[in-house]
Length: 383
Ligand SMILES: [Fe+2]
Image 1 (cartoon, rainbow, N blue to C red):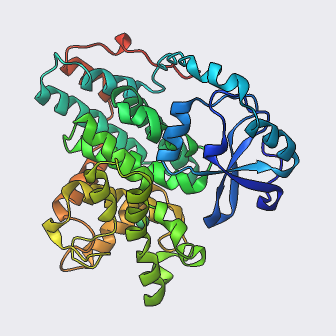
Image 2 (image 1 turned 90 degrees about the vertical axis):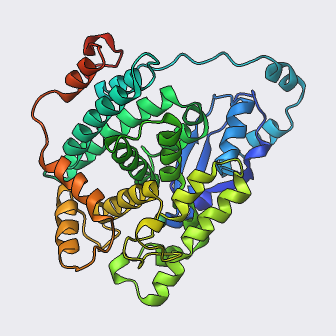
């Protein structure tokens, strides 16, 4: 439990100071300067392995914060040397693979990871499940229900990615989990979730691609740390031209941070991030790319980003359900002679899937399509 919410009660240290394999005698916190938010990261008693620490640094966690009262314990920790070598020499046991949290997550994992199912069937079955998830996420009538639906979708995608892509089981899945406790990361996780669902609904099922999309969603705004927090908190529609120019800098800042902190991140992830604010009519930023010059997957990440910005109030200060957001966006695009935000065919397909939500259990049908039964998949049934 967090002892204080006041950042002044904590001191900052480099994560590299933490000794691998040594049980912590103090809590480690993370600090988000944009909203002056401090959150618990690793509790007292935990011993962080070398691989875990390396992965955390790769994803940009370079600094951690410790409560001022724990200064003496921290000093004792950094002077700890003798037993450390012995401890780190022992390989960490592989943690057991968790059961999937949702039926959809378990089914997607089962379908996409089966080498005996032909690709066309996989695409069809995954698209069915994804469209169903999309329809359920975008047909909620209250903000409270929207939150629950987002949470369910997030769990399904977490299941799919954690169990099928090695990349997700390390760096990104840790950020993904933090999305539960920090609102700022909540946006990142929502964008990642929506974008992966869109991609699957459009028949894109390559797990490396899905993992890259998720990573792009999770990291797309880390450059906010490099621009004024005052500007970042102004609703987009209220921004002056000057505000908008400063705000736009978060995109190149994100790309630069990734190059510096995680150069091994695939180029595709960087392209998706670099283009997440481009618009179909060329009025986006930073490059003003027009129409089909915007990467087709980046358009999906951009759509996910705008949807969550509009739902969470970052767009015009008003919170909405995803259903209201789609209605607002549809009305907005209709007022234009040339569509502003998205390729109209892509947007129309998404709107159609949401409106034509099927009533029956789609997961069951999708599993049958690939010759499997739902009761053969392993997932934690909710109480
Ligand atoms: Fe952004």
